[in-house]
Length: 467
Image 1: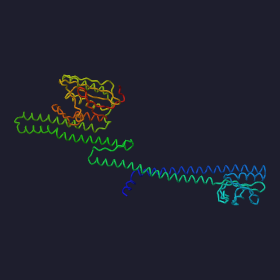
Image 2: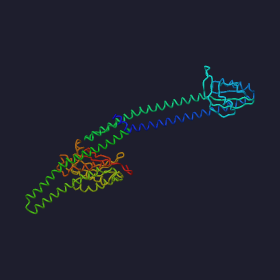
Image 3: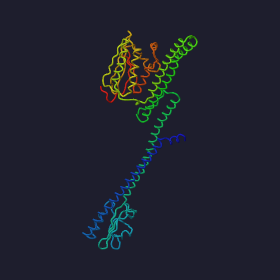
Image 4: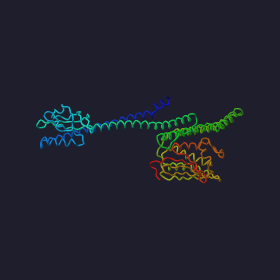
């Protein structure tokens, strides 16, 4: 009973009932409409036949008298059709025709209109059977009366066939609707149960579960794909939050401990104003470093929380790359290195100008820190090119690169490779680049530049971009 009640409450069941009712009503309306119009058409044809008979038989009487009329009636009465004839004299006695009994009222009503009557007629076995017909009577010279009619048995038979067809059709519609509802409802309920079971597992904490996809590209598959993308995003954010929490607990514990130790040492050992001042300045420097870390984390969080269209506009990637290259070229020259820009002209993307500029700044600074060659030289190249409907923007260096096994890991917050621990930083630069890339519908890709590393993101092409 609970299962039946559950089925009755489903939208699929209610929609099925609605579709069944509408389709049944429409079918019944069409069949009734066809039946009524067919009936009217057949009545019109019977009336036309009567009119033709009435026109022809009096002409026979006028040309040859009663004998010619009787001969014509006998000839027509023998035909295997539904026409009825009856000729009577002035006393009402039957002279010719194929009707055995007819109410005298209709016979005596000469020159009457078309009437529906019941009469008796001999069948093939010679038995009298009650029939229904449309008749018309009129007077002839000499006191004769002529009755012409058309049996309605064929019409009734045809109408009966239509009514039987209507009943069979409506019954078939109901049966097929029930069968269709059973299979459709079973399939829909199965998909919904699968989604509900997976959702329950996810709510219990298993964020790695995904909704099943049948591969039919129907509305359930489209819903599952979108929900899976949402779950992927939620899992990524939850994992990022966990990683941030863990990394803050580990990576920021050291500077905080050092800051606290310096303050305690100053309180315990400092004897002069100069010593206190030196301890305060060192503490202020450590505090500023911590504030920069939290500012970077907040900026990454804001970027991840932005909507895809927030601050987006048509921006010239070629100009941005040239501006950043011009800004960092003197700095790298002072380090004894070189910076080149290969960004073409007229490459227009849809994006946030400030964030794209920050991406180039982060990638160039990472290359300056970790992209030195074996001889200590710095060779950096900014590249931008169009690939289909995306623009690839990246920075290449000639350093040692990143091992393939670590390229996914270094994009997380606070992740720094062991050989990089001597360089300043907290491992947030590539995390910000990854957040900007995802905001623009792309990803941060780390590839082997042979030698060195190529870090690049892909951006949606703008409407006015040129090859």
